[in-house]
Length: 284
Image (cartoon, rainbow, N blue to C red; front, side, top):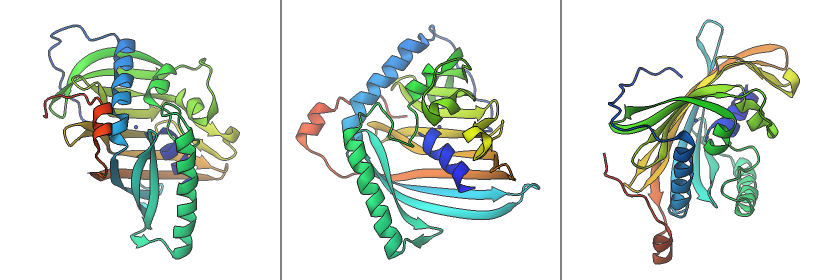
């Protein structure tokens, strides 16, 4: 059901079955995880002004799966996206390959206008209502372990695992949900940016006490970022599978994918270029 997908994508997306990735020699000690996270956050702040000048496109495909693993229904959605005050804003332009009707387009314009107004008033390090929890806050709720180095997409990466802490104090649906998660994060060592995130539910998570939905243990997704134009890290997409029980009645399973692409820099001026201290690193 759409309600389950919206909960996962809006709350957790930003971001599973992957083959093993080769470890690389531990030439020097892995940095302290907390120090590493502070560097990631600082680098993100440095890039915010540059990110504001980019637009991109997003495509999502949602497939409802039956008990035998067969696809029952497929839906697609295409959006135009941009950043406001550090927040990603998406405007839906097509559903199932068809442009929005005049009425749908009017309602979408109203929704996006209100969201932009909220984004302008919301600090970049605080999520908008219904949007993703930050990686830094996510890891505040987690126990982190097993730091190591691996190659990811041909670049040295710092990798560690995390698992939600049951007794940590949380606020809101996103943080409550995070306590049920476990996963692994890949951080590009040179740029100190999140390159890949894999997450799965280690236990069931009940929405509204299970009356609205219960997301089942094993539901999982991954999220990717990459360097764009050799200067900035931006989302490239993700994929996941949701298993849930909806309204106490229906078992539900869905596979979804997202592709973020066609990044374009729409505004360049001397003042912004001067204020944005982009972290330079060799292009892979």
